[in-house]
Length: 262
Image (cartoon, rainbow, N blue to C red; front, side):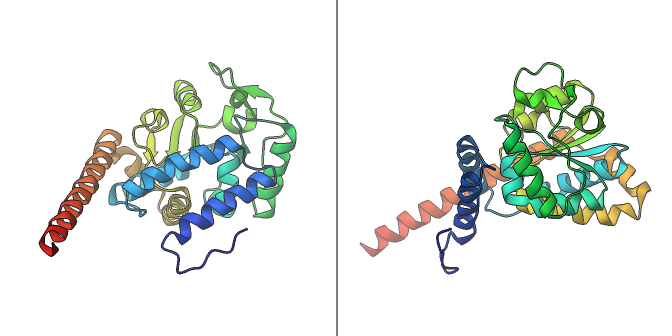
């Protein structure tokens, strides 16, 4: 990896990019995953690269659904494994939940590499190498899944998800919890609980809420009932509008200051 000085203003972003490139070289991430990351990063700029209040509300609801579930499953693709293998393992243990590798660009070797990476991070009994079921209505390789994993799950956490599978899981009657920086994506619009936040911020937040709610199962059920999906998405849109309006004011102020100097 390229040495990046901590004083660089884009330090965290550049470290993340380097991690993805390294994961690509090791057969974990595909080139298409690098493109997808750049698209999400653009939305994170708009969000101020920080967890918003409305994202925290969704993360709390996500934790409540996972804690209250009978068969929760965390779905993992290459980007998720590269960026958050440790947080995935810790969240799975906290709930507890099964972890399943599910890929659009699927090869047996790539699945095995991701399973080994997750196992090294502490994930146990990771599913993925020998799928024995299919998600109805999908023609891509993402339809292949495990009967004891995604297929029978009642709640599925799908970070950095493809919209078509999120829609297919919703049609199966599952509670779909997404982590997607784009609140306009098909994934966010299909999810029961769309978490609009960056992956490495969202998963630890969900874990923290899950550990707190494990001791209060009645509270988890109350949060599930009270969560307003439409209202929360609307709050995300309002927050983005506010961020853009602040940027416009800053830009106008900069132009006015430059004119005064002249």
